[in-house]
Length: 228
Image 1 (cartoon, helix red, strand yellow):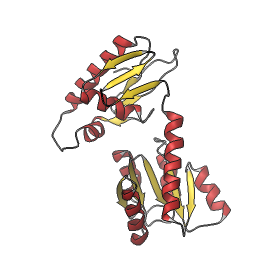
Image 2 (cartoon, rainbow, N blue to C red; image 1 turned 90 degrees about the horizontal axis):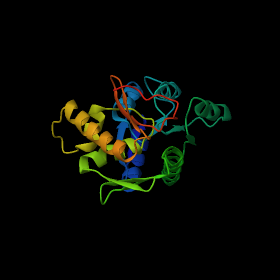
Image 3 (tube, rainbow, N blue to C red; image 1 turned 180 degrees about the horizontal axis):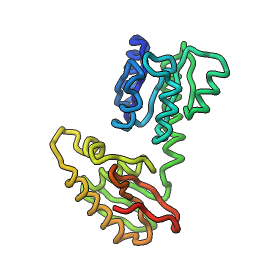
Image 4 (cartoon, rainbow, N blue to C red; image 1 turned 120 degrees about the horizontal axis):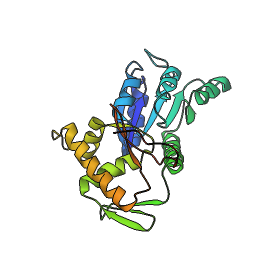
């Protein structure tokens, strides 16, 4: 899991980063709100710890803008303790609100709880991913995938409805920095879709979003999938 911390107080940011890394999370940090929305859209973190009072752009405005295109879990962090501020934070789309001063252990517990609620609510429970065998199980059928196909499916599956660009998928799949073209990703996706379609011809779950990338989504039978 990747966590983005947007916090201008370096001492607090360092403390949160240390605790998050110790809990097994990958962590990145911004000390202003100026590039926060762009960074969230480009890096697709699994959760954002977002301070409200930031130089450049207010945390509430950042949350509001992010919610136009993404349902990434957001925990607001602020020294504002008034009830109205907490309500505003939740109304613009935050998943939780923590007041300073706080216990870092409490923050880690809140992160764990928010991530669990978010992904349990979104991840289809009738699909089973067997990472040790690179297999997908659904409706009592198994499909064997290559390691790259499984990794692609795994990324999309864990974030239902979230659109990933080809570059984002490449960065997630090939973490050794190798150069891979967009066509390579498209080729892997095409083969993955063919295997899934052969097993479940009536269930289309990986969809192309024209000009952007791909997403995992189970559509209603009457709802057409987006064209490739």
